[in-house]
Image: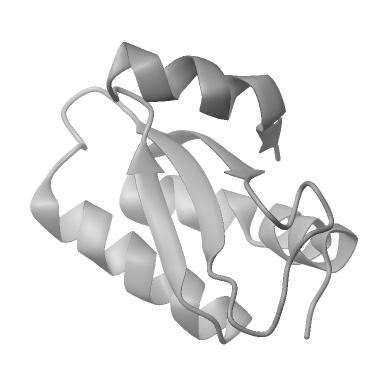
Length: 97
């Protein structure tokens, strides 16, 4: 099982490809991995903001599958334009790469 620092390092090393291939402006990790509360059943919570005109179903799903293949775990991909109630909670713990 991977831990936060390893996931952050892997994500960072693939950042240029992620930006170019999927039109990502900003990407970060939040949730159990950031809090060091992950378990074997945990998914990886990822917050993403796409470049203008790049937020579409194909880029979203392709990025989700890319990250799942990269890390070998289920990814919960959340777009930054979420409900304000959830957004404040997520933004309070997100670690951007």
